[in-house]
Each structure stands twice: as structure tokens, then as C-alpha cells.
Image (cartoon, rainbow, N blue to C red; front, side, top):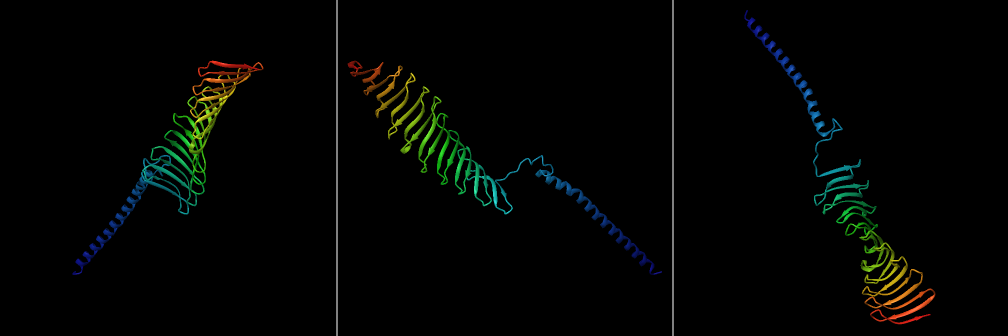
Length: 287
């Protein structure tokens, strides 16, 4: 009789322990189910934000100051970054790390592309200068040797430099739209030019060491060939030209441009004429 209460209490404790273990098992199953349900949602959200869930839709915005593309060996092959001026640039390198190309916005706000040679020096540049689009070519030492672009007034041209970077030749277009090829001397002074004048006549110009025009070989307004010689003050002092009939004449002029002597031949007759400073005839002889 005395053991009955103890047996009843022990039975109740066993029942409570069994119920507790059942609740713990149910709680663990609920946490696992909840985790399995929530994890895909979180993962899907992260993947969607990065654009992996739908490759056709990129992320709305990715912000960074530098992006780097590296090879299997960890060496950088390409980089998108900001320059020291805070402007964007893209750099491409070969497998050995040598720079091969760069695309950047310069400090003047104009975009340019630079191409590099084996020595890592610039060999070509394409882009804009203050006068418009242009192309620059460099030798293996990195010295500029050719420029093609625009001069003042948006006139196209091409300039050639020697190995010291000094201009030696240029091919330019004048305001009338006619092109000329110019050879340059010391200091970039023009020494000769071949091209068309404002009247669309082919001409050859020769200049002295100061760049002053001294001789012209070309055509007259009537389409006949001629030669003109100028003094250092750019005054024509002698000319040799062919007339409309095919006969030639040689003239000597003074500083005012007045013909003072003429030697000509017309219809098989040679004629010499001398004039005063007013252009009046002083002497004429015919042979």
C-alpha cells in the first residue's frame, strides 16, 4: 500500500519526459523546414541582384573605382580605372604584363586611344586635339614622326617630322580648298611648295632660308607657263612667260613693279624694249 503513490508519481514523470522529447523533435523539424523554405528565397534574392538568375537582365548599377581582369596565372591583362586626374581609362596588357593599348579621357576632356610597341613606347595615337580629330604616329624611340589632322580653320593636313621631332614636310589644304605639298627647312620654315593656287593653277614655289618666297614656276591667267623671280621684299623683279601665240618674253621690273626692259619674240622677230620708271618706252630695237 505504501509503494502505490511512488509508482504513480514515477509513471507521471515518465509521461512528461516522453512528451518533452516529442516536442523537441517537432521543434527541430519545424526549424529545418523553415530554413529550407527561407534559404532559397534569400539565395534567389542575391542571385537576382547580381543578374545570375536572369542573364538577360544586368544589375541596375555596380559602382567601383577600379576593375581588373586577370589571367590564369593571376597577372593583370586589363584594367578599368580612374587616372590621377580622376578621369576614366581602360588599359590592355599582353601575357608578360607589357602595356599594349590604352583608351582614356585626357585632362583637356578629349578622348584618345594609344597603341604601344614591343618596347612599351607609344607608336600610334588616335583621338582629338583642340582643332579636331587627329592621328599621330611615333617611331620606336617614341618620337612623333607623322600627324594627320586639322589646322586652323578646320582645314585638313598631314605633317612629317624627322627623328629629332623637327617638321620637314607637310601636305595641307588652303582656304580655297586646294592642296599643296610643302618641304620645310631649319626651324620649320617653308623651302618649297608644290600645289594649286587660288585660281586652281598648278604651281611650284621656292623660298629662301628665311621662308620668303623667291621664285614661282607655274601658269599665267591665260593658261600659259611662266617663271617669276622675286626679291627679298617679295617684289617680282623678273619674269619669263609664254604668250598666247606661243612666243616667249623676258621682263625685268623695278621695285615698284614697272617693267623696265622686255625681250620678246613674236612671229619670228626678236624685240628689245627699254622703259623709264613711268613705263614709257625709251628704246626699241627689232631683229
